[in-house]
Every structure is written in structure tokens, then in C-alpha cells.
Image 1: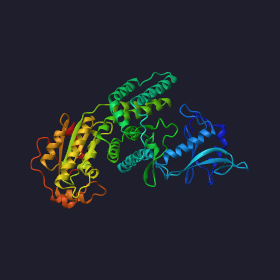
Image 2: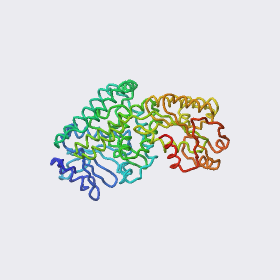
Image 3: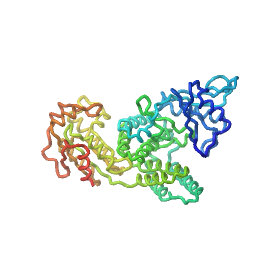
Image 4: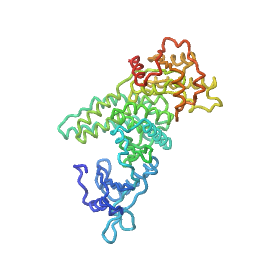
Length: 496
């Protein structure tokens, strides 16, 4: 258990009964994990969470009634995201023979949340540590969070710029008090000042989103240690239940914890995949990209303050440095990646996007995705339908650039008018045109091997396409048949 938090004597008999397996009917002892808030007992098929009878600055759990309420709150806030994982709240009962059992009709000694047990090493943080976390898992996590966010009612009574100011102010106070207790001075004044400046700059957008219903009671603690693989699917759990106010904010402030945690682990490519998957699934406006530096940096600052409080100054320094990096201004840049079907445009876009600046890398806009999110068409590849899709891509790209973001436009760009139009979108920002040219054999092989991709272009469409004769001076031609790593290196060299 945490060394500075002794076991409450009142709960000692209950803890002993749960740990031995006697309270749950398990044939042997349960594995016990202690945190600052709870005791967790892992059985063969189930896990039991017992709230610790303590009074915290942020939550008083010293009474039986308070622990019951918090158990029920945990069940309520977690079931929408993890309905198969969270089962029920049970009383821990003192039986007439002096034994202690989970469930029953005797007087309650305490309460537990019963959950299904997921496999060992199934936390996304553990998968990341083991090198097993992949893009598909991260994208499905982001999509699940977006689907969850769509179900939440707005809370326009909060989420104003002053509310975020109070969070920053509280972080400064927490860090300063913890540093003073160690005889040190606060090291975070420059970071807190930068956060305040960014908050002031983005205040109008934050307020506009609040009025548009973008403030919700979300998960509140959405980092990789609170997401597991359950029955093969990423499942967020352990949402913040003890203070609804701390879990209420902009949708992007909620999911920014996921993006930040991936960046903190050096998984920049996965952070980019998570961000793009969330944006596509949630239908977020590209203007909201402007809030990512502030919200991801605030999440890093929270980790920084908690690390100082835990006297882990090395980790605090890492989070402080990350927060500064997340706030670093980046050059608005538009990269257009064109080429016939099967040249690997999307693969290249995903390979170079993390290196184009911003807290999560570049926003990737694909005509294949935009087409599916627009009005249905009898023939989505008819000339007018294609024109409409490219026009919507241009609108998205301009909004992303106006948000000071890097953006990649991924499309065939076969027609000169389409190439001219995307170049004009970049007016006032840097433009890089990339044309991928590959052999027919390789293109057809790639198209035939697609599974679950947004593109509907099959081998027949790919075989019918022809290379443009004049690309224009803004476009550079690259060999699409070479390995992705070498191709991405060559393209990034041009950017740099």
C-alpha cells in the first residue's frame, strides 16, 4: 500500500476478509492492490473495490454513508463506457456467526463495487510499456470516447475561461505548497504564465464552444492506466466519480488526457492517430484544433503538480518540459498528398503527420472520409459529387490553418483544377505538394489488399486512372514503390 497511508483499523476486518477470499467465497486469497482512494481485490472472475475510510482534501470518505454514495456514483459514471465491466454495488455484511460476507441482509460494515475481472497486463499503459499498443487499439479507443461524448447532455453553467483559470491557479498552489514542504521553491511559474496567456488567447473560442453545448460531464481521468482491453476491445473505466465539477469541461479537455499521455510516453505517432480518429468520429470542427495546445498542456501540468506532491521531482520535470513543448507555437502548413489509387497516400500521410508540428501532429483530411460524412450520392465518384467533396476538403483545410495547425490533404488530385484549388487554400501559409507515382503492379496489389479502409476505389477504378501530364512547380514527385520509412524521410526532408 502507499507507505504514507496506513490501513484504517475500522476497515481492517473487512480488508482481511476480502483479501483471504472468505468474504467472496473464493477458494483462495485475492490479490490486493492499494491506492490512495481504494483497496482493490482481484479474484478469479471478479474484482472488488473498497473505498478507503479516509478524509481527503478533495473528498471525505470517513463515513459509511459517504462510501456508499461514492460507490454508487462510480457505478453510475462508469456504466455508459464500460457496461460489461461494472456489475453492482454490494454491502459488506457482518454475519451472525461473526464472519464477513459480500452481500446479504445483515448490518452493512462497508460497501464494494463489483466488477468483472479483465486479464492481467490488459491496461493500455501496460500494453504501451510492453510495446504491444497498436494504432488500431488507439483509434478504437478514440472512437469509443467520441461515441460516449455524443450521448452526454451539455452543462453550459460551467466551462467558462475563468473555470480553467481556477484550475491553473489550483495547480500552481498545489505545486508551490508541495515544493515548500520539501524546502524548495516553485519551478513552474513560467509554465503557469504561459498557460494563462494561451487561455486568454483562446478564451473566445472556449466560450463559443460552451454556448454550443460542448461542455459535458465526461470521464475526467482518461489516461492509459484507466483504459483496458476487455473482451478484445479498448474499454475506458475508473472515471472520476468523487467530484463532478472536476470531470466537467470541454469535450476536448476530456480527451486531451489521452493525447497527452501518449505524447508523454513518446508515442507521438499514436497520439496523432488518436487525435485524427477522434476528430473524424466526433465530427469536430477544425477550428477546435486551436485548443489542443492549451488542453494537452493543462493535462501535463496536472501530472506535474501531482508528481511534485508525490515528491517525484524527476517525473515532475518531465511533465513540465512536455507541457512547455505542447504549448510551442507551430507553423501553419498545408501538405497535399496526391497520387493515383494504391500509391500509398494515406500510409504516407500517417507516417509524416506526427513530425509536422503541434501537440498531436497534423490533422489528416481524406476525401474518402469526407465523402462518407457528407450527403449520400447515387454515384459518389460522379463529377459533381467529386467537386463537392474537394470543396468541403478545402473548407476543412482552411479552418485548420486558421487554427494554427498543420494539415495534410489526402486525395488523388488528378485534375489540375483540384490541385490549383488546394494550393489557393494555403494562401498565407506554407504549401508543400507531394505527388506519389507508383507502378501499376504495385498499385493494383495494394488496392486489392485493402480491408476496412474508407476508400471505395477497387482495382477497376485504379486501373482506369491516368497520371496528370503537368503537375505544376509546387508539386514534387516521389517514388511510391519504395518502403514507407524511406519515402516519409524524403518527404520530411523537403518540409524541413
